[in-house]
Structures are given as structure tokens and as C-alpha cells.
Image (tube, rainbow, N blue to C red; front, side, top):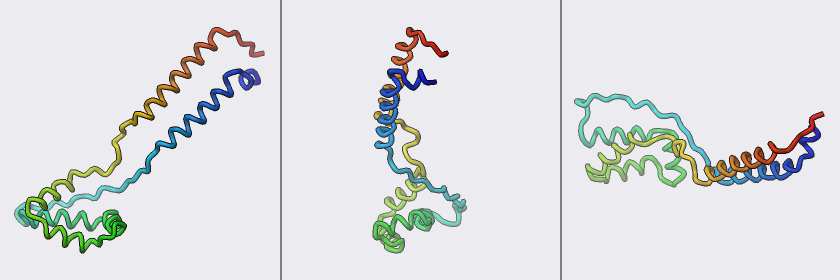
Length: 141
């Protein structure tokens, strides 16, 4: 164990790992999550057209998370509904269709270029260290 701690590559490797950890954590972005509300199924003969779209938008505005975000932006849910009532039928329909298509997650597991570069550098460093240490004879006793 003492031989491993006094090896020539221990200090550079530990410095590299600390710097890699700092670099990876520097590019981290905040994550937001929420539960997806269950969309109640409304029969098509009960509501149609603009009123159905307004119902979808109204249910989305009643969500606590969205309500809090609107308040953070300085807009009450009542004012938001007033603005939505001023939209044309086509705009209301497009908004209602896009609400159901929203995803609750973030990037969907996509890897940043920076993260990929750091991973490749780490693998390259490990390969170089393994190749350099396989030719040396170690005495573990």
C-alpha cells in the first residue's frame, strides 16, 4: 500500500481527478421536476371547439407549479386567463394543443459536449497510465 501512495503518478492523478470533478460540477445546470397531472377525459359531445380548448388551458392554469411561476413573473392566473380570452380561436386551439405536448423533464438525458470531452480525456489518461505501469516491475512485499 505504501508503494502505491508513493508512486510517481499518485499526485498528478489525484490533481487531475479533483480538477475533473470541479470542471464537471461547474457546467451543471439546475434541475426542475414536477408530477404530471392526470388529464381527465371529457367526452367530445359535452364541450366543443373554443370552450374545450379553454377548459384544457384552465386546468393547466390551476396547477400549483404553474400558478407559482405566474406569480413569480408578476402575473396572476386571473390576468393570464383574461389575456387568453383575448386570443383568437386558432391561437387558443394551438395553445391548448401545445399544453398537452409539453414534457415535464429537462434535456432528456442528452450529454453535453463538455461532459463528453471530459469523459474522453479521463479514459485517455487511464489508458496512458495503464500502458506506462504495465512495463514496470513492482515489488509488493
